[in-house]
Length: 292
Ligand code: G1P
Image (cartoon, rainbow, N blue to C red; front, side):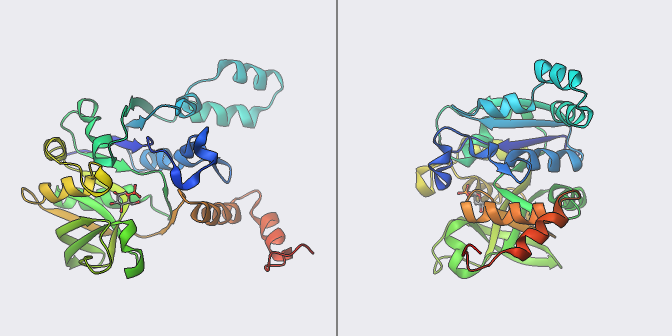
């Protein structure tokens, strides 16, 4: 079974980033030199995905415009002989076949995935939550596809999050199969430290079997009165195995101001052209935050 399609969810309010997100989609915040969502789009493409479905909502049209052609801008850049910029602008609009579907009511991540069912159409799919930025050599979806092809089953990305953080994540109970790989026994969405069956937290990368749509259709609202993908996976687990993969890479929660700036700093340091200069700038700083 080939995984050709990816769903990227971009319909949330971005409350952790208010007030900026009052009029600006969180997914369009610049993470160093490109919008947050572009990292997820490029990760999917670099993993061999051929079609991307982005779930948006009201006020998110900047995302569609960003990945669309911009003939006037292209003509201007051509006239000004800005060849490098023109190439990049054209590259962005021809990255891949992207279609959009709107989530009209904010009913949760599970619901956002559910509304893509007719587009995904009974195929296994990757799901990426763009807030989770992962710095790694091999894109995480590509790492997970190796597991998927071996087991032909749902694979979710996990990492150890620490007991005090479990309330922010879906948490799994699992048996280790081999290094970095677990077979899931149970899942619970955002438990208290006392309820949590482990400290293995779900990170926003999934390869889902198409039967997830059948279980999502009967998943009732859970935590925060939203339809949770974690709860749907719990139902799916009754019918088929689910694997959890501890990926290689460093994750940032770029949906919060602190995680976002941490990821930006790392990306700036790694930048081929500007990394050196930025490193010098960091060295020159008084790290107590005082002005020299
Ligand atoms: C979602 C999922 C949660 C997962 C997390 C990863 O929560 O519901 O299970 O651990 O993404 O980022 P959210 O962060 O959207 O509240």
